[in-house]
Length: 195
Image 1 (cartoon, one colour):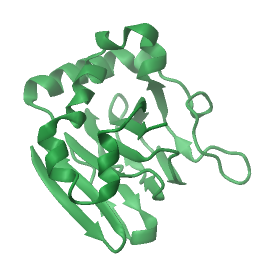
Image 2 (cartoon, rainbow, N blue to C red):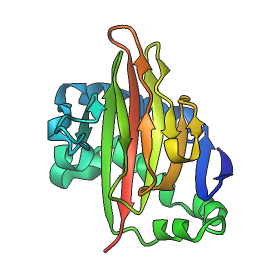
Image 3 (cartoon, rainbow, N blue to C red):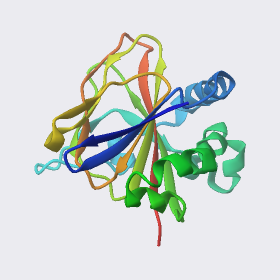
Image 4 (cartoon, rainbow, N blue to C red):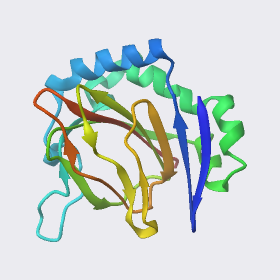
């Protein structure tokens, strides 16, 4: 795991490369493929809308907690997502910016597995979370799909097994994905908040 603390103007964000071990990554990819049949269109996954009512998101997804209901521990994605709450990560990121202290106090969480195919993307939007943590995964041959913070003119390359953490209120978007049929840009988003 390689943790990079990044600052761009007033934006403090974190990149963690090689976030999952190879064995963990294999389990996640197996579940990501199994969940393909349950994914929903943007209208079913609480996507942001444009002023004309159209969805900013082009892609599909599934909320893990809704799919597994009372059986979250049977999801590898859920179990392995607990890594974010480890002392190893927390002790490195908490001193960087006080907002990351909120990870320790998370009491409300949603996990969304998003699938982007050729031509898909997500227009500029904000999340109604304290912190958003997104891990990147590829199924097949995928390019594009970078994460962008438009206000800060910052582009984070879409890279296999990369985790990005940032304040959810920061405007962000996903650039258009290029992928042949059967290939997907997959993002597993953890939406963290507390009451």
